[in-house]
Image 1 (cartoon, rainbow, N blue to C red):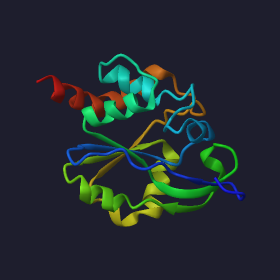
Image 2: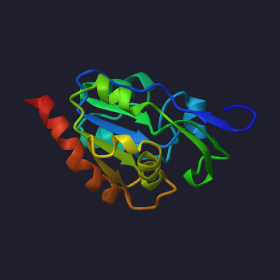
Image 3: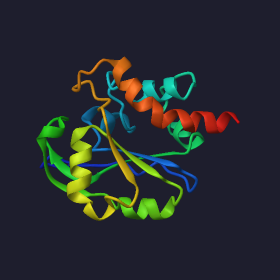
Image 4: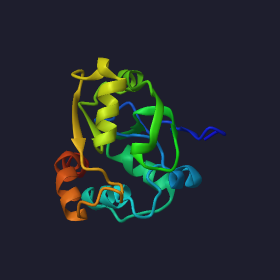
Length: 171
């Protein structure tokens, strides 16, 4: 971020054949430092995806991105930038949306948007009202360690949306 604590999102990970879009709020301090989304060691995003998609977990950013592309998953954030002190979604101020509509245009097979946590869901509906109803959007339990639902319950909620992408590859 800049001197005012403005945080900027990463470029989207996507390919034209993407079928699912996962949107977070904005990168955490740990993610920005690592140059990779969901890099906080206690965020279960990557372990959960590798687990449900049936692949051995990798910790390199390039292999994480490859996992998404292999399984036709696009990944981005609702916000292009925001002012945030620390990494908690409750601290977000002055949010500017990403052009998610342009991403959906570029990936016409996306049939569902998964919002990673309540803040992402609320921001998506507030900042991008024109997209609501264009494709189905679903609020998912946050993979952040700040959301203390047990891993097994997070996995159970995410798995039905991710499993078809794993099965689609094995045919």
